[in-house]
Image (tube, rainbow, N blue to C red):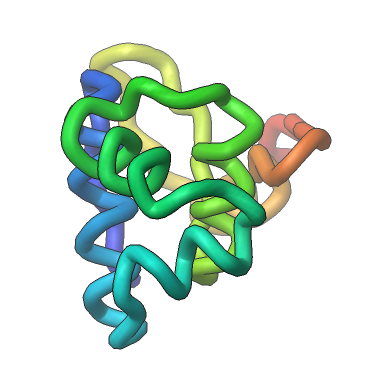
Length: 97
């Protein structure tokens, strides 16, 4: 399973850039899918300086998601990880049973 740790907005932007490239998309293609300009995608990838909604939509369109983990924590139970997903607009957090 592939994970990327993003501690800064620039880290998140770099992760989105990598995911876009993996998918074989140009910035213009991601921009069209998101309904934003290519410059917005460029800004997102360089410094992460866009709205949270745009960043979350970009992750979703690229087949990625953000998962919130306690600082310095580890996710040990992947069943819990699967239930604690942050996706565009909804977060479900259920501790392991």
